[in-house]
Image (spheres, rainbow, N blue to C red):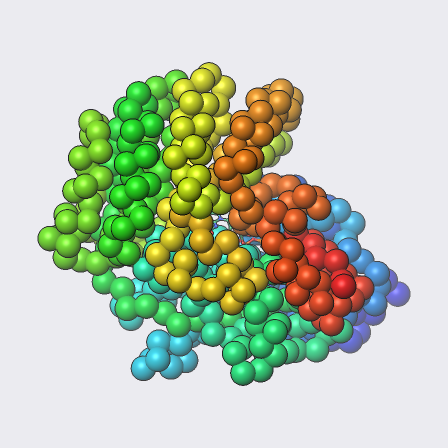
Length: 445
Ligand SMILES: Cc1cc2nc3c(=O)[nH]c(=O)nc-3n(C[C@H](O)[C@H](O)[C@H](O)COP(=O)(O)OP(=O)(O)OC[C@H]3O[C@@H](n4cnc5c(N)ncnc54)[C@H](O)[C@@H]3O)c2cc1C
């Protein structure tokens, strides 16, 4: 009897998809990575997740856990191993209307969450894309359009149910298994399969959202002014700068995407007008919209493209030098695509050791991406490395959710030493044999 046969005999609650099955092509890979797993297991219940974890562990398969399948590093698939695809665990339920507690299945996407909560005038601080999974985004941070006012997605988490490596279910929150609760808020999928998350949602009206763009020639002054303004701006205002967009050619404008979390035109104008005065505005389409409409659908790139995405954080004293270097390189031909996200606000008022996400004092998170056929990307790598070498003395850490690589240097950048030591102790306790290795993997202490 095959391994799946044995498992079926045990009554697996869910779908078992193997090479050759009609659905296999659709589920073998993820958004940014191809894969050829031996089994894609799609549990329909927590029991099914437990059986799938035990199956992978007992049979000695490499294991990938898939939430929304948007990991830049391609963690949601593998070659020859088992994938646990959580997409059937996607219920979104408001379990306590008064306290605004929302229970979300471990395989839900932010679009599914938004569709339910929007009808109740609620939303959860998350990301910018509907198709991104709640699981991956939350377990490593969650920097989205409400981040300055309400913090990271993981700052709004109050409880999580996790199937750990031995197949048992553990609830982690401030009262129970609080050390695990600390670790899952930043430690990614290192400690098990989160079958359900409970968040506190925020009352959400329509929000102001749009883009204010400036010519590339004004990039440096605009970005400097923007970063300085964000430091003291109303926390309803969250903003992301994008520039050096290769699809827009050498004169790609500086685009400041802006979300103002509120529906007062006066308050929005007071918050946004200082940004409008930073330079020569060539586009301004800020308008009132339902919160769900400001989230986009992640486009699926054509197969075979290679991506290299790197990220780092920037604290106050390094903002000016970092933006100077980025804008100098952005003006050169063949620059990578660059994005800078304003963080700060509520995120910075949480202690660095309160969660395994430690980069609390950063004012900005910077990110570069190069994408294209593998030889083109490989040829661009020396220039990319040179940029990051110039930046090295000004930046710190790394944002796990914006990294295509997963080597030891990446893990060391994501977790400061004291955070890593605490995570390694948790790994020893919950996953000593490193079953959950398809991650920025922590080694057991
Ligand atoms: C188009 C796009 C837009 C993005 N926008 C943002 C943004 O605005 N803000 C932001 O912060 N990030 C953003 N990201 C990054 C995103 O947060 C990460 O890619 C994240 O890992 C995606 O989570 P996922 O569940 O979709 O991915 P997956 O590939 O399914 O999972 C990613 C990792 O999380 C683990 N995981 C997922 N679900 C669970 C679970 N339930 N239990 C245990 N482990 C789990 C997986 O094992 C894997 O290690 C974006 C990514 C893309 C591709």
